[in-house]
Amino acid sequence: MAKPRTIAVLLGGPSAEREVSLRSGAAVAQALRRAGHHVYEVDPLPGALKLPPGTEVVFLALHGTYGEDGTVQEELERLGVPYTGCGVEASRIAFDKVLTKERCRERGVPTAKSLTFRSVASTWPGVDWQPPVVLKPVRQGSSVGLQFVNAVEEFPAALAEAFQHDSEVLMEERIVGRETTVGILENVALPVVEVRPKAGAYDYRNKYTAGCTEYFCPAEFPQEVTRKIQAAALGAFQAVGGRDYARVDVMVTAQGDPVVLEVNTLPGMTETSLLPKAAQAAGMSFGDLCERMIELAVRRAHP
Image (cartoon, rainbow, N blue to C red):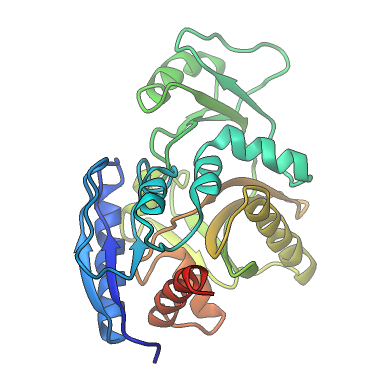
């Protein structure tokens, strides 16, 4: 067992994904306590973050705004306390879907055709685009505000709904195929997880309602396709400047070609979440995964 440490698990927070974060944080705290660490659970107040005395390292179990966008990372840098996961700049880039796409295209990582809207009054872009498309708030996580548009006449209402969640909205061509996600740990792609909603798309409801989605890990793809999916995911992680760990969502076309959707720098961390599933398929228990994340953070502070 690693040396017992005093750890603050940051959970909850102000985002739309607060409930998911509370579940992640509780699972992580329990695992770290079982490993012999002294663990505090801290529900942070943005701009007034206070850590318990003696905190040696922070485990970030936050999701969405404040947690994943680089803001809390910046506060922790100022406090001089090591924390799990990606740094300030990588968090900021990965949380912004437009910036992520730019970095991926620069590195040759496959990603869907896209367009950015900055006004709710925007009209359908014309003949270069045909439904189906997906509308996404540029800076949100966990499918918050995600809208599917199957006909041009659906576009205005869908755009208005997406703009409820951010000042910019990304439109992407909808990739038809199999939905997968790839955990990255220490710059290595873990076994691929395939995500199959029982009905509809993998939206917020299907993601967080028990029994609505099936998961298969390792996903059943030919070895060559698996390698391509993992290479695309790792390429996206590196393109945004990721460190330690993340989860990358990847669509796979009928021809077996991967298309990166986004990079999640603070993925869900319940025992049934997708990064832990992938780690388990690679032979790493949930407790060992949490422990490894802590040790990576500590090693940066004390190389």
